[in-house]
Length: 110
Length: 117
Image (tube, rainbow over all chains, first blue to last red; front, side, top):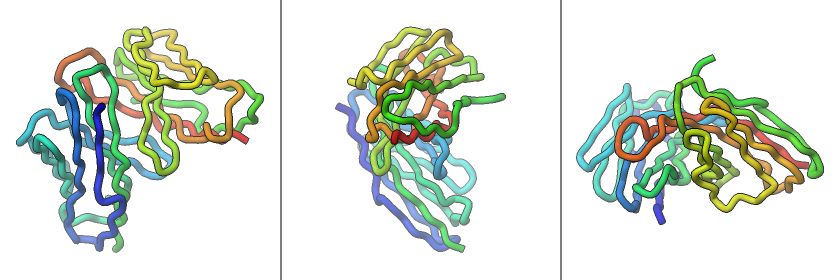
């Protein structure tokens, strides 16, 4: 069974204080690792898909990286608008099932 | 409208009521999904439809009944729910199909916040 564990559960940052979120996973035949951002009361918003170890993707202050066992989401010089819950999910070779982690709640204070 | 839309956004129902949640995708995708998001729990996949056929049913109680009349619309019919069914119900869609590629990416709607009294 595919498993995803995210850490930390919550992260408080000062504006401009860079940090990283971790997503550890076990999956049978990785077809993709996905990062989403979710604001309170809203649906997850797609950020990145990573397909193979060594791959990196960037979008504004966010950068996602992937190894064979984990992925990191680096937030560089965060702003208050980066406050959200960040979700990691994996898609394995068996079917269309995305397995999600519990998320990391990020709060960036001005 | 663009992306994935869901109605209603909020729903309060009693345990004896029957209601339906509606999802519509405007992305030309072939696969649609229902997820449940409860407080302090990861998103849980409930149902998957690919080309209007149900391909996955994750041991969901029969009081939840999905319907996919075409590749753009997905419904979740609810009856005799329990208070523990209160949650955010999310719909998603993707291009679908097996294999690696951007078609695997799932795009989510805003969700329906359901409260069962």
